[in-house]
Length: 312
Image 1 (spheres, rainbow, N blue to C red):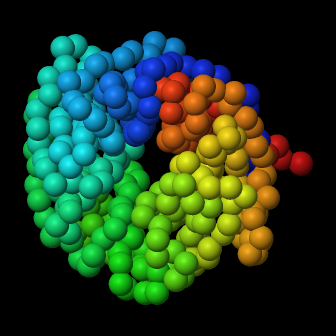
Image 2 (tube, one colour; image 1 turned 45 degrees about the horizontal axis):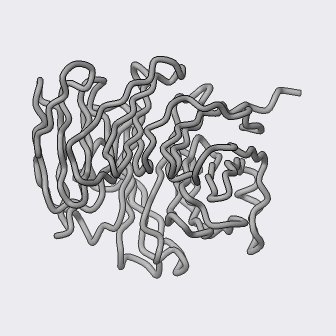
């Protein structure tokens, strides 16, 4: 059944600093939030209790990706650092440079860094260390995202607004199995959230989203308009979720997206956090009964459950 409601949000933890990045580890079910100034890593069990904070001796922070329950990688400006032993005595080790984006895989083990030079680096857990393997990309990639089984890449120049390519596996090195030309209006959009039924190409601080739906082994892209600029978005199955600067979190189900016209999309459900600061990042934990996790500019971490429509 499709999703239809969002439950009342609850505050889980606070880092007392602006949250910039988030990552989810599907098993054993952990959510990481990364703050800057000061740089702190908050790790929360998906159940919501037992959160812990680790202070990092970095000047800034932008992205985080789980490799295991004990190891994450962090992008600080254009440097990539491995944080080893987060459940014991953490150790920082630089494992990359010249990175402009870091993408996490929900199952862990592998993350991808997109370089300023147009190349990419696979960051992989090798026993108790993190290995970095550079490789060349096909085309001029501007964003990518990892799911458990696929890599979603947005490439410049392949169409009016670029092209979405879906590759099997944890890197885009195998040839794409699916492609979709993006509308010209998608050209400024520089982030992507991938999924098996819906992929969203977006830009933080923009109300424009390119929704790419998958059906019968084919992709179809269309532009949709939200009623306000989104701080961040996420996808689950055929639904899109968006967090807004005014504290709202909205659900847009597959039917709403399919029926979208040029007018701002009416949300299927909306809740207001009531948190300190503005939402900055949005993450999803779980599949059958997913929960949304929101990190704010004041460092608060909030969680809310997503409810499916009842049969009949």
